[in-house]
Image 1 (tube, rainbow, N blue to C red):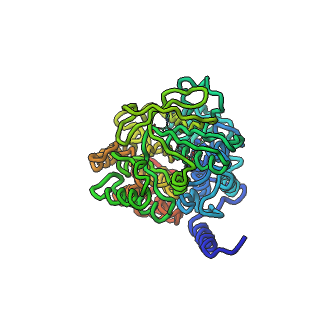
Image 2 (image 1 turned 90 degrees about the vertical axis):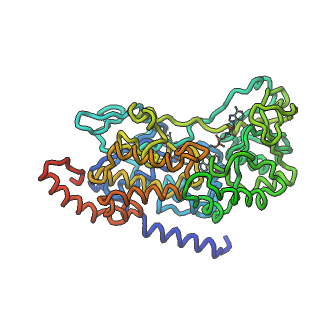
Length: 500
Ligand SMILES: Cc1cc2nc3c(=O)[nH]c(=O)nc-3n(C[C@H](O)[C@H](O)[C@H](O)COP(=O)(O)OP(=O)(O)OC[C@H]3O[C@@H](n4cnc5c(N)ncnc54)[C@H](O)[C@@H]3O)c2cc1C
Ligand SMILES: NC(=O)c1ccc[n+]([C@@H]2O[C@H](COP(=O)([O-])OP(=O)(O)OC[C@H]3O[C@@H](n4cnc5c(N)ncnc54)[C@H](OP(=O)(O)O)[C@@H]3O)[C@@H](O)[C@H]2O)c1
């Protein structure tokens, strides 16, 4: 491979990040201390959270519903051609990750999750084929996962993700179709060469299916999308800039990026850009290639509703811009040989958690920092309650959330009280009351960072933990301080923390 200075710099940066921020794996056979954490789900969030816990000396058990071949979660269930749409610098789900390029593919992502799992010796701490059905407390307030045979836990990290099994809606008449029908995540063995491909859906998977169809030499590609979504360029600088909107909602200035995107990015394809929906309301797709394919005539993007599948294609109600779903349009027959359902994934259930956490008006995602249910600050639903965002799923925040939970468990003076957690949720809802979405249904990465800073500053007992929470640095020092505080508190008859 030719020497690339940019790649060399990127590799150096990753090496440096790993050196500074990766906690050391525990020594083989080391006794890990309490608090003991149960982590549910062995996708990248669960594996990363577990690595952080054991790296700081805390014991974990990782429960995964599927078998060993599912280590890596959703990434083990998608096409080999699937990959990151955002730059990998924004997908560093653990400081020790080393990417070999800007936009890694599925096998590299699974490989990195696997390496992390082995590096932190999580093999003996992972229980595969163990679906978590319920978590509940014993009379001492310790968590039990499924049944007492798995032991007792002080904290729970739910890391079940947002993409479960493929969603395959039944479309009227689809049994009459003479061609093939596949979900967008199951294309590895499909041959589209010389065929007419119809893609149902207008999300990130539709864009990925379009790219796959181009690469496999399909004769004609049509995306049938019933709603317009924003597409932003595949450019790390622009993507980070958009995530810099700290308000996490549409503002008086949102017309600026929206107009710039229409003028400079969509250009002649402005018709595809959403007309009545702001950029800061729904997760945008990140892609620059599809416009090239549409301009070259290789692919077509049609807005409208699927009416019925016929033996050789789909009867489609083509709608003009701004006409809502199901509104009046022009019926056309769109012919195809292969239908790809880019219709998304079912959301994994969190209903193994206690019923109280779902009680309105504080059901998910209206939780403290979006992940801690106000009734139980010892539960952290890491990366699995969000709806829409401009940001990234597999990044530094996984570690921050994990360390916040560790801080809450180790140091009772930092643990938020239910009443205050609810007040933070109410305050955030009020601040975002003018947003077109509900407050917690859309956020940006900088808003998330602001949340972390705010809740750390608001409680002086958390200050000593700040370096640990944000960077994983210096867990020993605050632990020593808590030990001293404990002695004092025990003398006064307060609850003990978990430092033993
Ligand atoms: C094709 C594709 C591309 C993507 N690209 C990007 C991208 O570029 N950028 C981005 O930010 N995000 C992207 N995503 C989103 C992606 O979901 C996240 O980035 C990330 O992989 C989620 O990891 P996770 O560990 O949170 O969840 P998952 O990988 O879904 O893992 C959850 C695990 O929990 C297990 N589980 C669920 N319920 C239970 C239970 N009750 N008991 C035990 N185990 C359970 C599941 O079996 C699974 O293994 C993409 C998603 C897809 C499908
Ligand atoms: N490389 C990547 O970055 C990448 C690739 C793939 C997926 N992902 C991530 O994975 C998650 C899922 O993405 P996704 O694109 O698979 O799903 P998605 O975002 O839920 O989009 C599904 C699309 O299918 C449409 N749809 C659903 N049911 C339909 C029906 N019965 N008839 C017609 N259209 C229907 C939806 O329309 P409506 O919107 O009108 O409901 C929507 O356009 C997202 O978080 C996404 O970011 C990322």
